[in-house]
Image 1 (cartoon, rainbow over the protein chains, first blue to last red):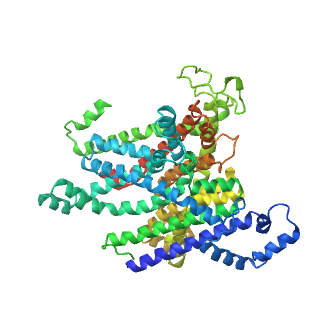
Image 2 (image 1 turned 180 degrees about the vertical axis):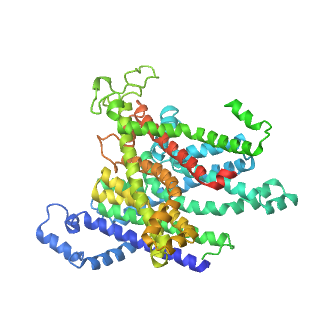
Image 3 (image 1 turned 90 degrees about the horizontal axis):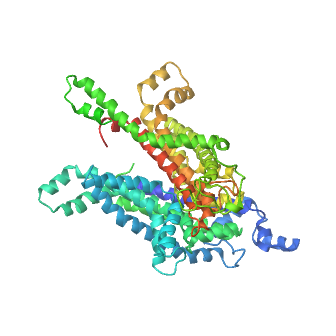
Length: 306
Length: 305
């Protein structure tokens, strides 16, 4: 049944979020005495004791976890050890840049992948088909960071066409979006092709053609719509992967997003910010996957899950 | 090659023998397409096992007088350094050969861990079913939804970077795909007659699982392993590139890329060649995986999918 399936997904999502708070909590405990980290170097033993009481660090570990988890769910991860502001605020400031990059990459990949996949499927076994498939295989094998660096080499260093770093103008978005979207473009093109190949041989497509509908209408309204479901599932996973993939892309292009902040915070040993970033990143990914599951059921009412 | 292909088209008085021959021929032409990637991977394994013998220079050798020397095909390049030298005068080819060792070791070890964990959990879930199946499937769902790069960042933040950390992170996060494949296959094997027969002669559950079920579900696992091997190599390189993987001066392809990035305007080869080695490795492993999947899947073998 659909309802029990969605319920199951919801439970999984909640379990993941609990798992994330647990992982983040363990990080906090393994990095040393949180009280010492909080007061900073040069504090007296009394200061540390006071902090320990104030932050309930003298309580049993389970109670500490529950306190931490309830704080995490309210977005309270404490203050940045370096900047002194609430850690979550620092991460939230960076979130729009990361989302902008992710959706630009997604848009870029779909704009090229869907037409390419359809064309390949329509001209199956032709040279166009083979070229699209070859590019798709290569595109799925290019390491993200190498692609990014090569794009900088060609378009910034050699041709001086596009900026290599920063996020000041719309042009700054082009290279990072291509870098982040390339893998998804390659994979989606392949999926669209195989989905379309299957659907194009079906009876209802033949019927649609026999009715004398224009080919474009047959392709887009009858064929594409039905081959889109498997793509949607993969897309949900892809967006999640892209969101964590932005860590690499942001690093290459000095893009001021969450990944960039998380990485800087690791090297600066600013753990509250790392925790907040990991928690928020994972939660967004879980929510997107959950959203796709719900969308899936909405789009195709035929689907009945056990 | 051309003459053999023409042969198969000619009229044949023995259609069955001809069909058989055609099957062998198509298998052969498919094998040809996998020859190049397979040869590349074999070469890479040899390089990883015998870097001292194959690399033109000693790993520690650096020659500041000859730093940022371009590769052989560019003006100013020489045969002494086929792929040029880096900012410290180290031979790029030598470092790529030594880097292959790290990449392959991390790839193989993490696949072994992930595969073992995944196959065992998949067998347990598929064979015994009930609540333990529910538990394992749910666990896999949770694991799958947790972005591995964020997990890696979190773990590295605590434990610190290093080869063991990387192998453990990749090994313990990539087991879900094995569980899914193995579990599904076990479910289809579980009701087969030979299992009932084994049960009738009094074989224990453990014996049935390892002697009768496992050999029948292991093939798809090998295909999956090829793909995860490629993915894990990229993951290690990404982490090393970010400074979260294996710290310098150990030569890793990702680390070399990160270092070479600073010299992109003056010496592009420092970053480009390690990346090329990585891309070719991943491409080869993926092509090999595609080929294996087609060979092992009887549906693809008969018709075309």
